[in-house]
Image (tube, rainbow, N blue to C red):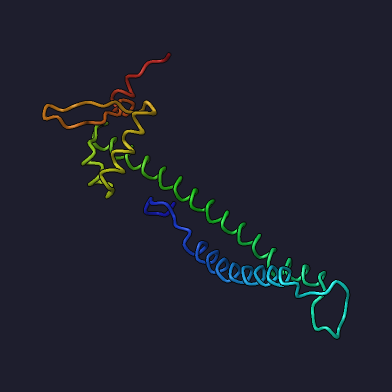
Length: 170
């Protein structure tokens, strides 16, 4: 999280990964295609024959593996790293949204509407509605309806200091 409270971005890390993936993938694709083409066309010899000008099968497979297969495996690992970064960023963002909604509910006496959440937290109506409904699913909020028909999300576990001070031992 940054000082502003919003989740941090891993933009530089993602840029470096993409900066590595693209040339590696092109390199791997070229060498795997060349290896496949040479093997399928029979453009190799099984024994070392310098006069033929063809590569031996062992050298062809070895160079294809080192220049094609290994970079392709590395590309797959980098893509998995990007997916992991994306999931981590999403989890941080979701946590930031939940924290922000709880802070807003506390500020508003435990009751918020979708529109208040949208405007105060600068988020879309769909995202605000989804996040608030998740609190209901977790049992941390209840749905109420105002006299005018507006849905109000009531966080009954947000209580004032007075009520906290009057709490009794269990």
